[in-house]
Amino acid sequence: MTPDARVYAYSAVLMGSPILLKLFEHNEGLASRVFRLIKQQENIFTVNRHDSEVMAVNHAAGSHAVVVSQPVFNLIRCAKTVSESPDSSFNFTIGPLVKRWKIGFSGNSVPDSDDLRALLPLTHSHDVVLDESTRSVFLQKAGMEIDLGAIAKGYIADVVRDFLKQEKVENALINLGGNVQTLGAGGEGGWAIGLKTPFSAPDALIGVINVNGKSVVTSGIYERYFECDGRRYHHILDPKTGYPLDNELFSVTVISDDSIDGDIYTTLLYGMGVEKSLRYLRDIPDIEAIFVTKDQQVIFSSQRQFSFTLLDNAFRPVY
Ligand code: AMP
Ligand code: MG
Image 1: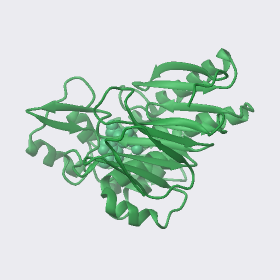
Image 2: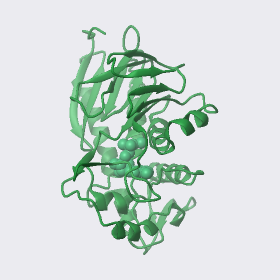
Image 3: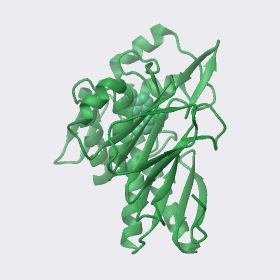
Image 4: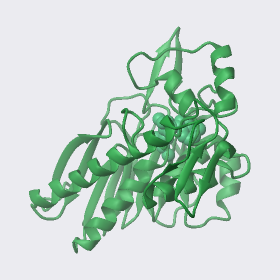
């Protein structure tokens, strides 16, 4: 894994995350166009500012339908379908709970259980009405809020990949704060993407995943969390209870062609836990997952589209 001298890295902070672009040529102009594209996308989808296309929908909750652009409509339709799949713990109407916890933002606190219970009725994805003919979105209850945080980075990573392809770039890697998409092999052995050691130094790795033209997305409970009275509260919430999802997992990594699938499945599989996920993935050969458990196992659903090198022997690979 010697660093490739031909690789040029460009970085920025966007969407509240460090963004890294790797190219096989020195091309600052292209890098700035990529960062501009990401910024444009962020401006459309963010719910962390007062104004965006998605916030326009949220502001109109309980009042009226809002016409949105085709990409926003498509992403909302996709998020609604995933949210309504059987036993899904993915819920794109989780906004009121996310805003109440403020995990990863200043002012976070453990809400009263009564507060959380009162917010749950505002998190039903069936109360989102989509009208294809007018491309409009209506949140039927006042106080409802869409949050695309579990899907938007994946979608944007694919937008960047498609843009680079269009620019005839053959080898590139874009990392949107843990959401990686790649073009080409990036050198001998494929692009190397680190699997982080949970709650350790930022550069501590359990191992390295090598891919060629695939997406690698990780959802982990160490990404955003806070501690209160000796307990850790992380950012993936259980839509049934309103509390952080609690199971045997530190993280789920998904390897797939499209990063939007990786982003959706990491959140879905996190909610399912290891056993159920492994059964579920048997029927979906294009989606492969790596589970890191709290008892230090690294469990692979299958390994067709990537190779893995273990670096930290405190973890035990299970194939
Ligand atoms: P990810 O980084 O893909 O795991 O997504 C986490 C982000 O998605 C959080 O920061 C929230 O904005 C949002 N979120 C939290 N819990 C859920 C959930 N159960 N379903 C969908 N989105 C969620
Ligand atoms: Mg996700």
